[in-house]
Image 1: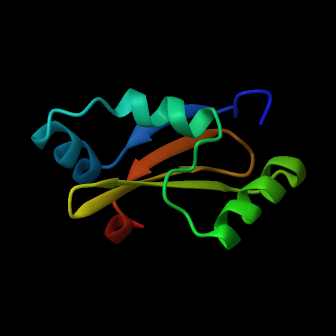
Image 2 (image 1 turned 120 degrees about the vertical axis):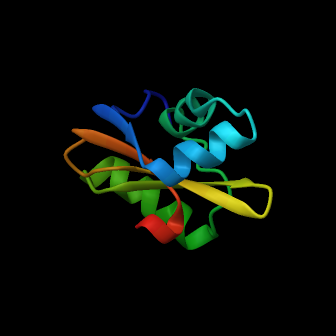
Image 3 (image 1 turned 180 degrees about the vertical axis):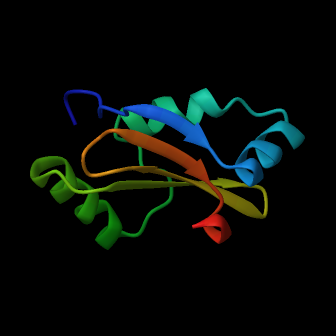
Length: 90
């Protein structure tokens, strides 16, 4: 990806914030990776879906493992909002 992904407004769910705070992890590092096209740990199919989403204007998903859990970052199709959340909060 050559240009950063437009993120819009960045928000986080309480669960994701608690997880990141509990391990003293900065959420902005994950946001920067997502914006730069580092999708974290996704299967090949989901990576291809993200590449299509960038071209066609669909929702983009990243998944980053954090110990036994993970956080997802989702940028909506219209690029108006990006949310950091736990999968169970989806």
